[in-house]
Image 1 (cartoon, rainbow, N blue to C red):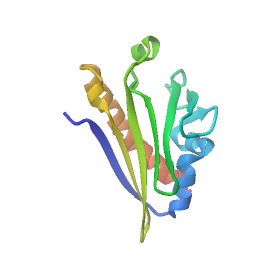
Image 2: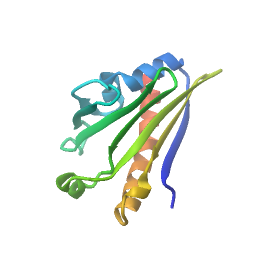
Image 3: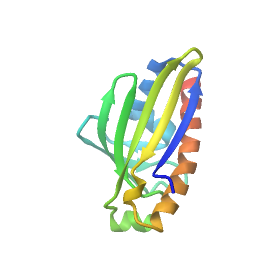
Amino acid sequence: MSDSIIKTIEIAAPVEKVWDAITDHEKFGAWFLVALDQPFIVGQSTTGHMTYPGYEHFPWESRTVAIEPMTRFAFIWPAIGGDEAAIRNGVPEWTLVEFLLEPITAGTRLTVVESGFDAVPEPRRSNILRSNEGGWAEQVQNIRRYVSG
């Protein structure tokens, strides 16, 4: 079983616009459907709650680990994957989410990588991988629509 999820998409927008949509916490919230309480700052936590219909009661917690302007933004977050029991009980395992940006002739190539699932015990690992795989497929389309609109 894979330890990571990788989604790559080409966006007809300059890297600067995609970067801003990913690293500005309010803009991130608009396309990710999450209300974040504070900005992304390396070494600090960002908290909030989901605004995605049906998931409004899900908390958001992340810790920013890298902001490399115009190329890489990364945070860690709890390996929840829509598991309400994991939310109630607390989750000791965290995964790494990276947004990698590359300028291309047509605009920006965005690659989203979530890794670290090998730390999550089965059967949760399979469920979280499946849930997050679908989630990232949707989110890369959300960001494309957001920066294109």
